[in-house]
Length: 342
Image 1 (cartoon, rainbow, N blue to C red):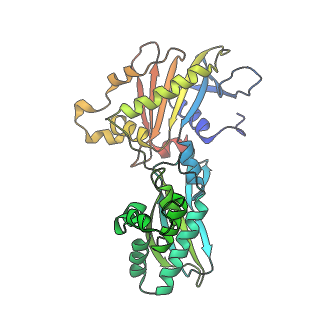
Image 2: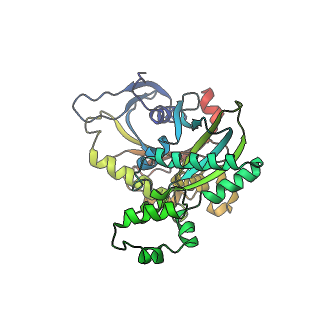
Image 3: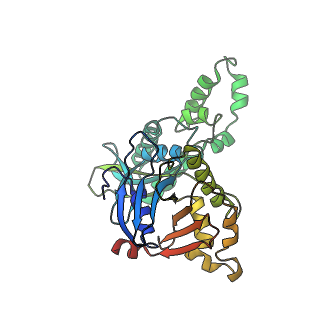
């Protein structure tokens, strides 16, 4: 199997198909000017299936995350892992763990290095003031407030009216007003009028591993609100079906056409876990595995649609297999350790 250019999600899909089918040959399909899928699988019973793999992820969120964390593929677990990004600074002596939240990464396009620089300046001031780690933690949290909280502490509108230049550009005024009122990152005050601002939360401060060499370790968070019980998951899968149907990448498939939707660790995967994974054991028996709701997913172009996401407690793989023929859906929950051992 040629995997050099395949993604970890594409390789995961092949492994999961192998939990349902006796796959005897896997061919990586390379574009040759005509529409192609990702894989061609041959089964022991003579059937062949072209498999297109699509990964549901938030691209704007991933751009945000990439600035605050390091990502690498874990081949043993067939998943992507993230580690905190480190920002050493000779002015610091402590190790700070900070999480940055972004509710609107698509519209918050300002480089995060500016925010981190302002954050580090605050932490330098906090360390210079001294105190126990807990006192430093509380002092940093008091300084790193959201724009809304800062606006609540000050009356910027009255200050603008009283300004000697009330007709000045709003952005210029707000930047200067932020500096005058001691806000830690004045540019965020300006940006907050355009989109929901990023939020900074200091998680922990401790002695640095290396004496007299401090560091800030950042981790990103992109809140992912959703609606209903399983409606968001169904809509997410349908969106990928519709997109791939429009692209018609399997026109030359000699056998079956399968679409494999890999859900990122967001709310669609949470709903999959809630109703079809280990978490469904917390529901009433009548609510578990409501296969009837899967009839809402419509696909004519594909013979089968596969859906997978990871359970949030034990990280097992939840797999749903849907058939255009109308056959009953198939489902498996595959332990992470079983997949690695296979």
